[in-house]
View 1 (cartoon, rainbow, N blue to C red):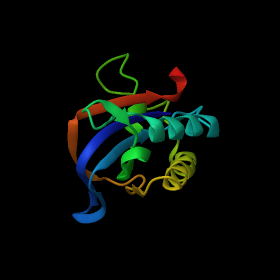
View 2 (tube, rainbow, N blue to C red):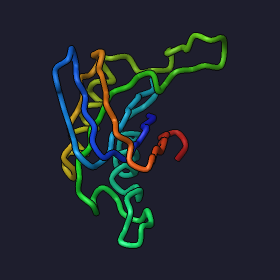
View 3 (tube, helix red, strand yellow):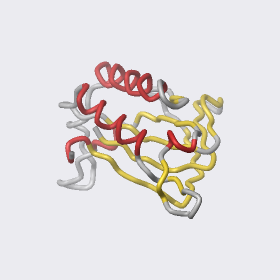
View 4 (cartoon, rainbow, N blue to C red):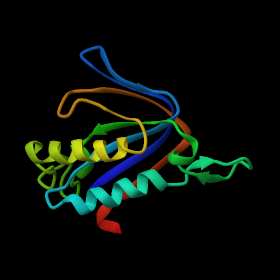
Length: 147
């Protein structure tokens, strides 16, 4: 499981020009599942995201988590994070989890995050327009296989 975490000042996701979800300050997560991901990968990423200290404290040092500062999470499914670009110029998505399995993990991921922080999803499998005002910019990649 790979997640790109971006600290955000304001972000939104739309489908067919219709606003689906929107947050002010918080985190935007781009979430991609691999074929061999399971609940232990999900648990690892949830814990990391909630406790990742990428928000400034009173001294301007990144020392606070989303739990410390409040805010919301915008979670966007993105199978392309599992792209293999080793051979040629056309990415292969053979390692990406199939949609019917990935949606179950994605929904569980969002449910678990939402227990601690307001978490709003995109539309799984849809062609989405995601607008992110990256704060910092702060962008972190978490890979459950690199634990």
